[in-house]
Image (cartoon, rainbow, N blue to C red):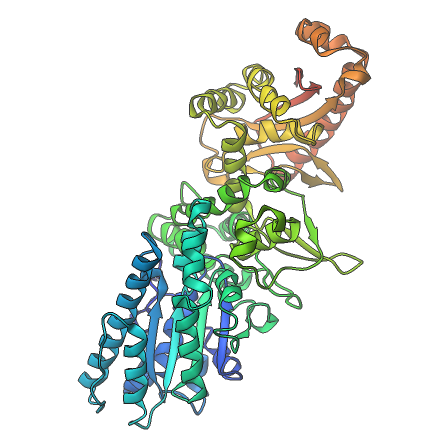
Length: 594
């Protein structure tokens, strides 16, 4: 079994024995409209969908239809439109976004001209008589018009495929705010993107671009070019296309079963591997009306390839290719309202509620602080795949959540850098955290939080001064998804343990501990003392404060109950149990339980 990790060539995948989850049954649904926009996060297989359409509709591949599609759903019942188009494919991820607006325009023209030259050479080679297409290297719109004129002399219209239509624009917008004028020059008034899509729209009305399929990550650019191209049907919220990109749990299970059999593992390994993949890679829902969460396909292929080749799980569950999404969280972290949002989202059970997801937002929203309300922030994170749909409230508002543990790690990492920008101090905190699960010693970590983290909280005057603050500080330092399933806020008999670190099943050979921590928070006024008084107390004196003693006692009871239930659930744990109590933003007290 071969896995097409990093491969988006549909023909190669389906003719050279690669693993493929058949989505060709979606083709008849896609034929119901002529011009469509399909949005999904990065690394979700959009390019493979375009390659599927390219191979299915290309007139030059008519003789290869059986070889490419014969074993698939559409091969058994093809539509009338199969192999009836010339294919022009543009990939805007190839456009260099650096430089001035004039330089970006030149890069875009070079790409379009190159694609038109390739179009002409390919169909000439395949024996299709096309009048000469004139290329104007200073004006790709002229070249595009020349292509349309040439195609009119043939029996075949064009199917236009545009991949990552928003790629270079999003890259520009993720830069410093001074790039706003550069972006506006591309999309507003007679900017080149608006003009380009006007030309495409004009060609569709003349039936030369008979069909258009556009993919991207966000609707940002679409909002800015609306008057230039307002005929695309938005299908990205349609429940029938929820799984157009992504794997179902049943599909994932079947692959795991095959790998488990080839590696001569016992059948129990299937459930173990599936649980691991579900924790890290599942959880995406893109359309209301869909009833199944889907798995990130790129991450699944990353896991499958390693598991199949080595008969062991990947050491790191986060594929580095996904790490670039951190830039989107960095963008949000720079916004005043964004910081609190990111901190809240580090908590596993936290859900965000908004009235609706914005279907379009443009450069003005991206660059204006006044428009960056909660709806904008949440919608932005949804489109980039770091939030996903979680249903509706009773009053029919939209609920969103963090999809899975891989994405959670991005939030945790960003919050850690946001609160502890000095890398040297961050390293000190991580070293203190290691002593918790390596030695069972939580004192160095409590000291670090007290001396370094609490200073940050006081200076920034965060509104969330409570147990959440304490939990966030410890979580960002202890988070380790290489060794642990960080099952914080795990539900145990309808109650929640604050932080559990359960060693991954494939890492139990290591000399580390499982960890269970219960957090409590006591306000200075409830303890009846000032900040200066709190600073002078020893650990023993802290524990004798009535309110802190009370919270430690309550925490002990909870930790013992949770610990017993975790032992019954997992078995054979090396569990270190702690109660941690913060006194305002001044002190941290703790107790280790036997």
